Length: 162
Image 1 (cartoon, helix red, strand yellow):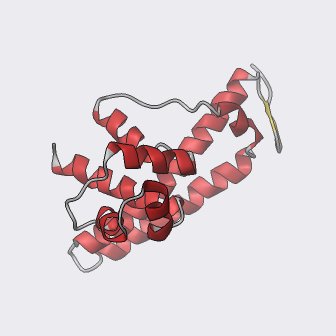
Image 2 (tube, helix red, strand yellow):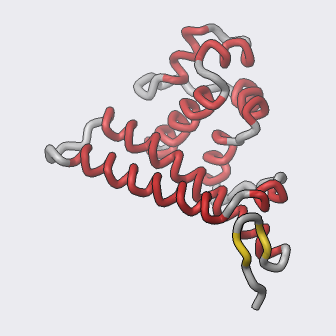
């Protein structure tokens, strides 16, 4: 396994624990100890989450974060079974969120490299913003796909078919 893949999995673990309500709640969901879940949440600890625990957390927050990283590492992408719900997302709001997070990512990278160094701590901070941007872009793309499949009408914006 490459270091890049391990870092992506570790980032997905942290995001998953956060989206499930933090370490304490992840302990309750998975049945693992607080120290073990803390190791999964620590970007500097080599421990990786077991598949069963990852599945339990993904099911709880309804976001396949680790599964998506594993699929991507194998040249695959996951599809969203709830794509219909994306039709209710306002395209302007979704776009605004992508733009806001793009600016936040640019700021995080600029701050990280301003001293000519890019530390692991700074990389973790940049990765967290990039993860949020990735999710926002995924939501925007899913919404656009639903709009196309429905012929061009969505909430909050009148779109015309060609």
